[in-house]
Length: 626
Image (cartoon, rainbow, N blue to C red; front, side):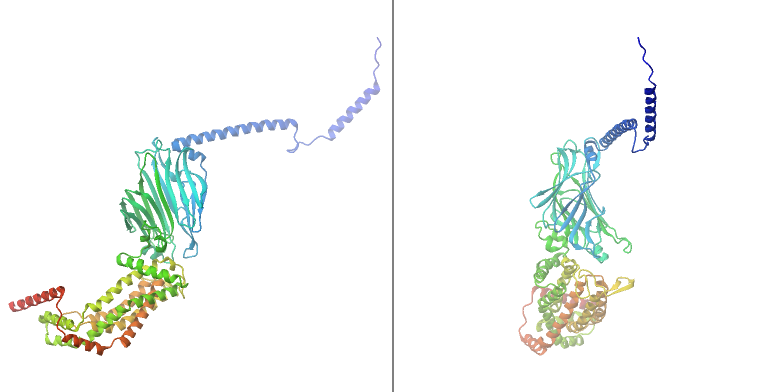
């Protein structure tokens, strides 16, 4: 067998090729960087990542499981609300009001009243920054006590025609839940609100009391916090078909409550129910302890009431009202009596405002754009209507002036205390023959008093005047300021208002003119009787000063009314005195009356004369005995 020879040439070629390969591999060796890894490293990283992801997923699953266990332990049947619940809000909004409802608690956390501003031109909120709370506290069949304010509701916002509907559900399951349902209509402050439970009869413990708690800290909205808080902010509630109010610092238990109103000066937060609350506790607390420091809130209002189950379920139809407390608006809600929270005064004062002054004001409002001019024109109308009373008073004054010499002669004819009864009898006889009655001068003044007090309520509570300017006053519902004092005067304030000054000056001159008239009305001062003329002189100066101090912090519209009213009264008095009343004719008429046979005495007059005669006889008997 032939052996194969060693091929040196091929061997050397292979060595050269091997050398070239080694050189090439060395010169083109890749750098090991994060961007350029070997296949082995990539595979290793993939394995590590897969392992880490698997661990993370296991941790999440474990965390969710722990969360579910914790929620189940804490909330029982309502654990679903905690696990699936999310933070967030829903908005209901129309042309008048904007409500923001939070998923947590399903409650209103912002209530913005549009088209109105605060005294310092900020948006006007009734609810904001957790100043209000709405909560239902209830027990479950597994012995847990829960609060809806702590739980998450699932929101669903839909439309019902033009109405916006927000359903907030606190779920046990998709078929079992507690629902708050809000429905807002266009261009309406009143919002429908219902509370109902579905399928919770085996979840809610009927043996435990279900309590509804609603509270609100009222924000300050007006320029004068003192006026807003002390005179116009009240807790109103309708119980047994009567509207009641609660003073600050008090708490009451009421039954058959149809609605409650957390009323501030011009705005109110109301909750109405179709199923009356029983054993409801209403509370009002004054939050202004120091007017220099407590400048944000006025009062705290609270309603605590148990809710009744029907067939093991909750079912209440209610309404929310966040809006102005103006009489013209609230009277539209017929059958609710919400208009009584407008605070027009009680009795005859409220009657006059509702039947006379508001109709007149609303009529004039349709023709006059300036509310200051409207007040002036309204004052003219009122004064013209009242002018017959002024005339009647002046006529009585003129008659008394004519018979005054005869009355003075009685003091000389029957001197001394022992003749007091006799003088009074003779005085009344002269007045009766002359056709003069002391009451004829008092009655016109008394008839004007209801108008005075009615308007005292009308102007400061009329929301149409809020933030309306006239001359130097920038808000007719609050005081005007022409000068800011560097200090505060007790009972006066830290500012100077011009309208009260003008009103006080007008009152002074009116009382000055009226003094002579009243002097004529008075019979001559009898011995042992107080001198009323001196008291009247003091009142001429005391009344304007009292007016100045009291009205300096009051609505400028009211001071404007009193200023114009007194000016007009002065003019009317001058016209009656100089152009209407003829004292010569009055004197002649009195003389004719004296010639006529005396009229039969009324029963009241007869009883009065008998009583005076009896007193006179007793006085004579005592004198004789002594």
